[in-house]
Structures are given as C-alpha cells and as structure tokens.
Image (cartoon, rainbow, N blue to C red; front, top):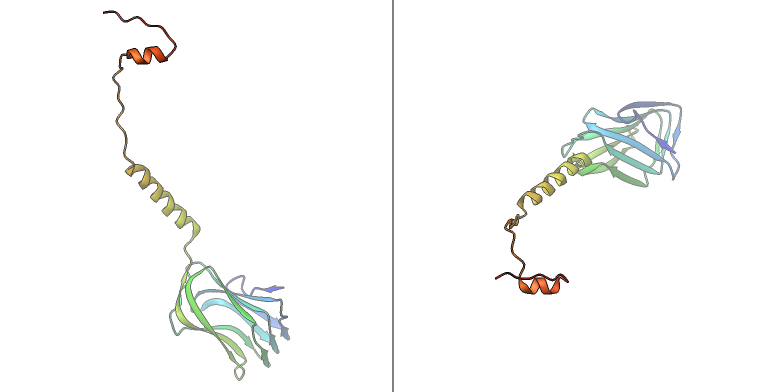
Length: 164
C-alpha cells in the first residue's frame, strides 16, 4: 500500500489512527521549505515500512532546513525501516522522531538538488553528437576522370585497344 499526502504536495488528514505495515510506503513530495507533502494524523501514528521521498519539480533545500513529514495528535510509535530518495541529484536527510511533539521531521544534512531531467540530457547528447559530426574531416573528392590504364583494361574483362 502507498500513502501519498497531497499527491505529491500538500496535506492529507487521517481522521483516526494511522498504522503503516512493514510493506507499506509513505510517499512524501518535497519541493521547497513550506511546499511539501505532510500526513496529519488525528489520533495515534504507528510507523513501519518505507518513507519514500520524492523531489518534485526543481526541489531545493539547504543544510539545516527542517521539514515536517508527519504530525499526530496522539502517540507516535515505531519508525521507518527504510528511506528512499527518488529524482534527487544530491541531498541527504536525517529522520527525526519527536515523540514529545508527536511529529516526524526531516533534517537536511546535505544540500538538496533535483536530478537532471531526461530531456535536458537528450538535448545535450544530441548537441555533442552534432559537434562530433561537424568536426569530422571531409575528404576532397577527385572529380577528374582518369583514363584506364593497360593493367585496368586487362583485369576488367573487356578488351580495349589503345590508339597510338
């Protein structure tokens, strides 16, 4: 099962308790501070499974930024077994479980930048290929017709008679 608050940015509120199984995913979209996915639980939150972080558009966060991922009004138990990153070029996070405030936050420990878009890479590769073609030396074409030599005549299977 996948839970996607905000699809991918914005808040999703769960009216009641939230329990994440070991095989479930909580997908959180990240764009900029204040523009992320957040799961609001109006009850207890029991965590497990995977926290999947997704860079949306040109996501950008600086070292030290704190990002709210989950906020519960009741108790916060458990933790995520794994954290995955999707569409990031750089960036690392610490997952902080604040049991007193009953919230989960990400602390940015390395600046976050998005992965290059495939279209940009394809344009770059196409341009490099064009440059390679333009740099390839061109051989001059000899447009002068040469008269066949006696040797060429003998091996071509045709009989020619040279006039002298």
